[in-house]
Image (cartoon, rainbow, N blue to C red; front, side):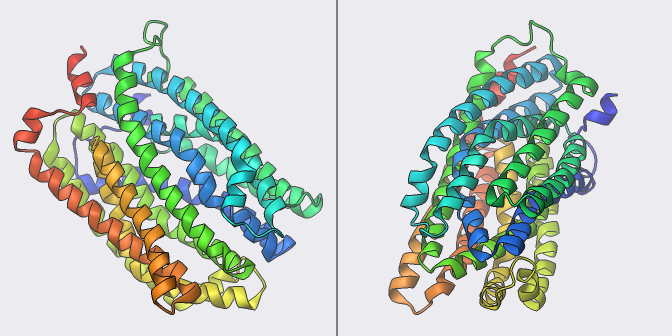
Length: 464
């Protein structure tokens, strides 16, 4: 049974392991993006560009509110992967139990706070009055579903830490199909508008989270935790929080930066907002191979860090970089040739299609840097480099806040400053990731390793 629900990534060819692990992640991520695509295409086609703009206006702020429990979940996954790599089975079970407490608490607190803050935050962002009611409705439904999202994130992060990237996929596929069907029923047949689109996604997330978690308890022996191992463990909790809070800060800073950029988009009106939403949805698809490889490398690096195999981590990063750069070149060609046609899947309005098509010609030139961000970030997160998370987030917020100011005040870029900012920010963040990795690599053989072990590694070494 264990062979079907775990994968040992400390032995074997890195590229083969990463590919086998990343493929289900990629399929799952594509289906997860289908949630957003289904909402956007059905809302845009049936309700118009204003409704699509209302849905798109909530994306960056949703990411901000979700950052806290996503960061904690990520920290828990790193700790679990390192225990698994170190072959400490009881500690793996303890980590799974204590992770549940942390993720549940953080998701409930985040969801309640976000639900209350939605109207004020959307107003602060300068959301146009004509789309504000729909944006508030969609956003409040989204924040109410935070605990449901957390259940799926918890189950999938624990399973990935053990090398199982397939189980979460099965339930995600089912929930995606359910989401599309409910979208058509709620929005098309029943005329529930953006409320119906949000409700469809909410119910689908409930299916994905509950199904994945129940299956894990039934089929994966590590999830069957006895009373003794379910007890609160201060060391594991501190380690997960120490790793998770910087991740939460990183994603919060990235979310703040995208929220700031969304405010710039809003200042150009509903046409620019609809085009930005469509290009964002397409580029979320583009990012899925990069994100899947990054998640695979995070688990790979975590397990090999626990096993003390630093050189394997370096080999894995090299293989991952080659893979994402090849994919980036292919995606760039597609967007250069057919970007406008792809935007046309979301809206009928010719001005939105023209604007979005030209925008994709700009951002696609920077896709290789986007791939570099994901793979280096995956490795550094996997080894527990907490300081990097802050640095990476700071670079992204500087790019998305500072560049629009410079472009709008000192150039004639106009609306194109939105997409120029996105591309150049990827370049800057990618460069910072590479520099940080090179620094980490140099320190592995020197005084840094002897002087300061990461806390999570200390916890692993101290346990029987």
